[in-house]
Structures are given as C-alpha cells and as structure tokens.
Image (cartoon, rainbow over the protein chains, first blue to last red):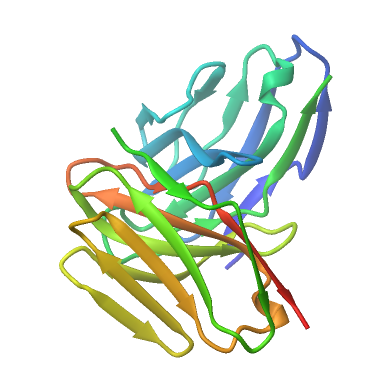
Length: 114
Length: 111
C-alpha cells in the first residue's frame, strides 16, 4: 500500500493562477480531508469528505474547491491563487472519524504564491 | 466553537521528562489524540484517549485528561533526541465529522 499520496511536493504560482493539488489513497478510506499548516496556527481544516459524492467545508474553505468523485481521490482546487494561500497543504484519510482510528497523512505540498 | 490551544515551544534535556499541554474549549469532545510531525513529513498518530478516561499509558508516553478543566497533556519519559518534533493535539466530536488540530508544540531535545 502506498498510503496517502500527494502531488506535487512543491509548487510556485503567480497571483491569480489556478491549480489543483492531487491527493490519492489506496486504503479504501471513506473519510478524507485537506488541511493547511501555517506557523503558529497549527493545522486548519479546509474541506473534508465523508464518502464519494459528499463534501463539506472546514474552518477555512474560502478560495478552495473540492470534489470526491471516487473513494480514492480528493483533489483540492485553488481557483485564483493569492499570497495568503502560501502554505503547506496536507491531505489525510481515515476509515472513519470520531473514533479510535488513525488519520493517515500525505507528505505535504509546499505552495508559494508570488 | 472548536478551539484547541498549545504552547508553541518546549525545550528539554535528553533523559528528562517532557510534558506537552493542550487546552480545548468544546466539552463535547469524544476522542482526543496526540500526533507527531517530524521535519518535512506528515503527521503520525502517537496515541489517543477516549473522553471518559482520565489516563492512558503506552510505553514512554502518558496521556492525562482533565475533562473538567478541558486540559490534555502528553508526558514523554526519558526524552531522546529522536523525540524532537512538533506535537499536535487533536479532537473529534460525536456530532461532527471534523478532526480539529491544535496549534502544535515544537519540542527540542538537547544533549
């Protein structure tokens, strides 16, 4: 099993550009989520999904879109990149939420918006 | 709403015990977790505690939960240089589907 795979690992965007951060898991997990990590602010939840076809907003959803057409994939789209979206992005998956289960994280995508 | 706070830094000498603290605001938390993040990597689960427990021990790790004060702590006995990392507490609630993380504590272990 590869676990949770995020691509790309690094990305530089110009303000106003759009892009998609990819996340795939091969563990048949129902729950997937996206976080951004900023110094002194921990991990903040952007969007999450409890299963294919179902998504919901987290704490900081503005400027981001997600979709969950398959159980395996949960891409995060930046519609028009802004410098405030410079961050490290983590995708996570778990069998379920709110229980004694582990969330598995990808290696992260470091995004810089100039 | 959900708010999980941690102190940002902790520095300890190798061999000493480390205590990392976390406070949360939502009393309906069901599970509380400790995750570890090593440099350049994602997070990995260290341990968790159910909200009806006061303490959980797992080898060098001891988790204490004071539900009245909404305070969670992680004690690492005999801290080693390999324990240097960022430690996050996190919580979930029975009526939401969110896993909410704290601000993270950077633990530095010096010889």
